[in-house]
Image 1 (cartoon, one colour):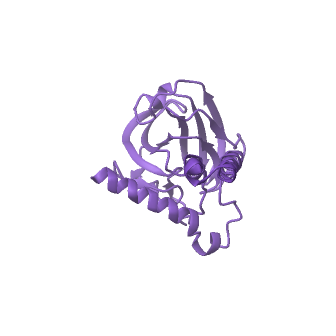
Image 2 (cartoon, rainbow, N blue to C red):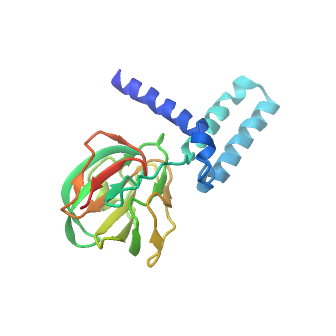
Image 3 (spheres, rainbow, N blue to C red):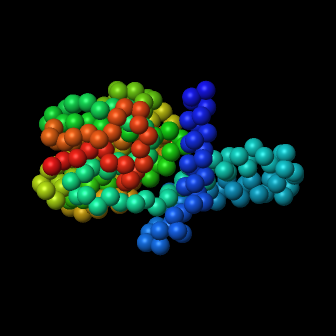
Length: 239
């Protein structure tokens, strides 16, 4: 019953993301309401549904309409309010916290606080920068496509890591990890570029996770199982 209630809540949140654009996209966010990565998929699925509906009837077209509705909700990209505190680390993705532990950051070869966000197919899949800073390195690794909910996905799956030097000199790593269904990681930032908190820097198609590695002096502000929203949810504080 709890899983059904959670699923219903997810659907309600999706509808809110699609139609309640917070005073018409907050009047300050020119980014499209839907991720550019999804425009071809949206056009094809909606066009096919309309064509089937025109050629046949509603019953025959219903499966195509449902598929189109899923595609539209998957590629939604709603605006988010960015917290002003510069010493906090923001969630880079929508989803659920599945890991908070001390771990080895293999990308910087240091011990770190690891916080992982798992995204299911109903979450927004646009990835956003968790902090202001300079991109020092971007590392891509080919790999497997096991369930992103498994711990081994962090080291075995296809992944893309971004190492960022924050304004205060601290370094963090955030890693896009492909999942069982996700087969395409997109990253748009490069070494030497400056990312702003909440800035869209990438996208993962169809279910995945993002691992965030922080200095050991970071204080986690989330808990296992907690639902988070990209940019709006504060993962941790670094003082």
